[in-house]
Every structure is written in C-alpha cells, then in structure tokens.
Length: 83
Image (cartoon, rainbow, N blue to C red; front, side, top):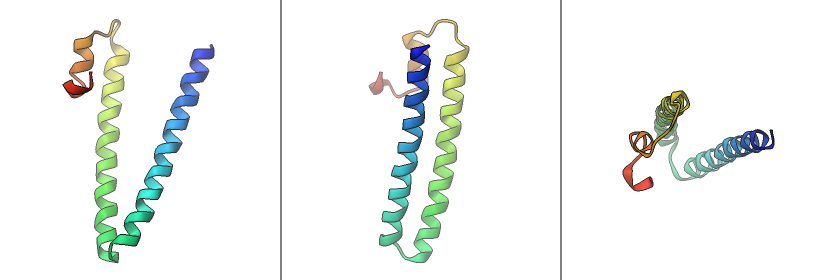
C-alpha cells in the first residue's frame, strides 16, 4: 500500500511541477514576443501539448495491458538512446 501512495504522490508532484514550468515558460515568452507572436506561440504550445498527451496516453495503456514487459516492448515506445 505504501508503494501505491508513493506512486500517486510522485505523479501528482510531477503534474504540478510541469504546470509550474509551463506557466513560467508562458510568462517568459510573453515578455519576449509581440502580441501577434504570443498568439502564435500559444497555439503552437497547445497543439504540441495535445500531441504529447496523446502519445503518453497510448504508451502507458500499451505497457499496462502487457502481462510481462520486456526490454523490446519498452524500446518500441521510446528512442533507443533512452533505454
């Protein structure tokens, strides 16, 4: 049970840390760009965020459904230099 609580805590911390970094990035970009550039940047970051979310969703679902996860299973989902 302790492992599950730790996993939930780490996932929550990761999510909020990501939100904080994203907020800081938007604040920095808004100081550097013109109003037109900010709009383009926001649209681009939104599309990129959706694409990454869809990629992560498919990756975790695939690994969860496997009874035994092998090194080859993980390599099919991430760049080879990370494994």
